Image (cartoon, rainbow, N blue to C red; front, side, top):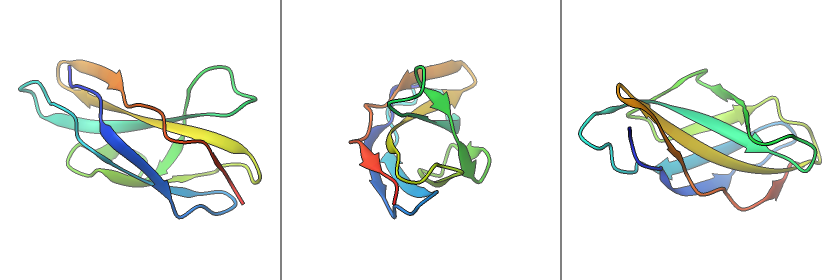
Length: 100
């Protein structure tokens, strides 16, 4: 499976959305087919997959908008790469941000 995506950056923070961008990790000789974005808050149990635009992030695109977040909540994000071999390790978590 692919390695962990690298250099996750959070910006464009609003009440219910954030912009994420990252660099691809090693694909281990199988092209990355898609990315999944996960988030956690002080209230969540572990990491939860979040809704993004587009719904599924194609492997050649390394940025997305996360939507349907709650206002005034602290979030951390991470990204997981997937290829035909399987699901890779998650990226390092982003720094914690608070929605507006």
